[in-house]
Structure formats: C-alpha cells, structure tokens
Image (tube, rainbow, N blue to C red; front, side, top):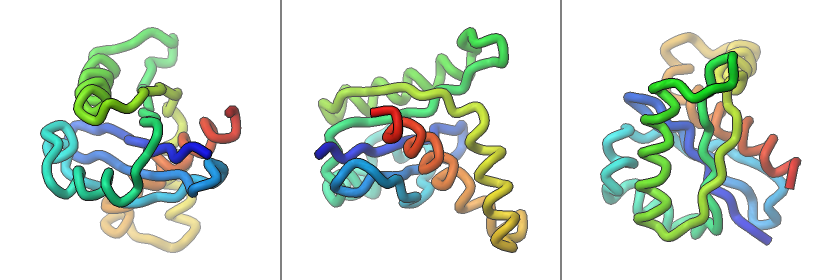
Length: 136
C-alpha cells in the first residue's frame, strides 16, 4: 500500500497530514513553519524519515473560477521543490473548502480561535488527503 503525505502550504505555516499504512485513512500530523518545509529543515526531514511516504499530496488553492492565482503559483513552487528534494511523486488536489471545513470541525470540538491556529492547517491537510485517498 502507499503512504501519502499531505501538505497544506500556507505563507506562514504548512499543515501536514499522513495516511495510514493501508493508504485508506488520513490523520493530521502537525504544523511546521513554511520556511522549514521549503528549506527541508531538520524537523521536516525527520518527519519524512518517520513516515517514509511514497507520494506527496499538496493542496492547490484555486480561485473560484478554477484558474491558478499567484497564491497557487507560490504553493506549487514550494511543493515542487519538496518533491524534487525527496524524489517523491507529486499530486495536487483542490483544497478550497478544506480550511473552512477544518475550522467548523474544530469549533464543534470546542476549540478557541487561539487553540485552533496550531491545528487548523493539519486538519485541513487531512481532509483533502482523505478526499484524495477515497478517489484512488
């Protein structure tokens, strides 16, 4: 089975999620500073060693018209640099609704805005990863 690692790449933070060994269930992992992910810093490299993913799945923000905006360009650049550095295949998935959905889920769990900040990106990553896994 394939282990997928998902990245929700923001300007400041990157939410990270991973699939289980069967490639069926997505789980939030953690949020790292965007600079650490883009720069392949040690915390991110250790995470890759821990999970040994077979594929990278990156959320790709699209404008509602469906065309790529400047934000999508930036996200894709970071995603491609990580894929190149790791030698992993790269898949893009639409992530427009996942952040909003993640906030709703965390709010229902009773988290405050401040508590949510450290979790929302990894939960969003797990949501679009789950969508991707279900399509495989």
